[in-house]
Length: 133
Image 1 (tube, rainbow, N blue to C red):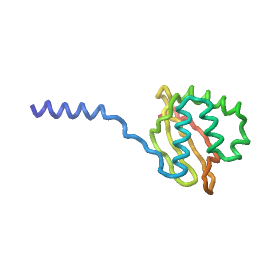
Image 2 (image 1 turned 90 degrees about the vertical axis):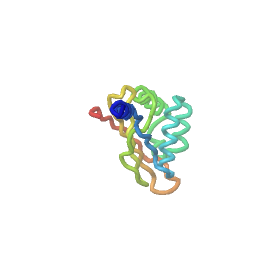
Image 3 (image 1 turned 45 degrees about the vertical axis):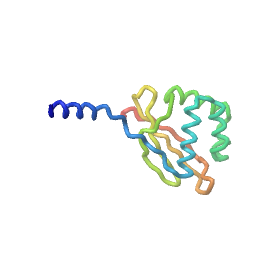
Image 4 (image 1 turned 180 degrees about the vertical axis):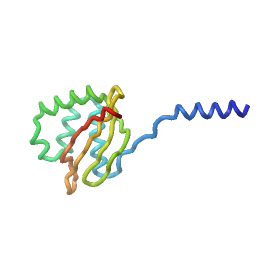
């Protein structure tokens, strides 16, 4: 009986869900959360509205609406939905978050750079794929 109980507990432990990753509770973390929400909506209008509200003017000037739309389409094909798997770095200047790709074969590290003064808009956004997981 004790052996069966130990086996049951061991099996139950194998199926434990991964621990949820929480974004920082800061103005910068809230901007990253808003990015994830806009991306996961799948709605290009919501995504573009996010850009207008949360990105620094210098970022908005670098890419046209058409470029942002094309990037969104490409990123949705790669990631489908963003679910944070790891916070790599979290500071006032930068947050790096890993998200698995849609096929689970790779991790994307999203690097969000922030303006140094309030309201801490996103001043840079880069994505690097790690195929080695």
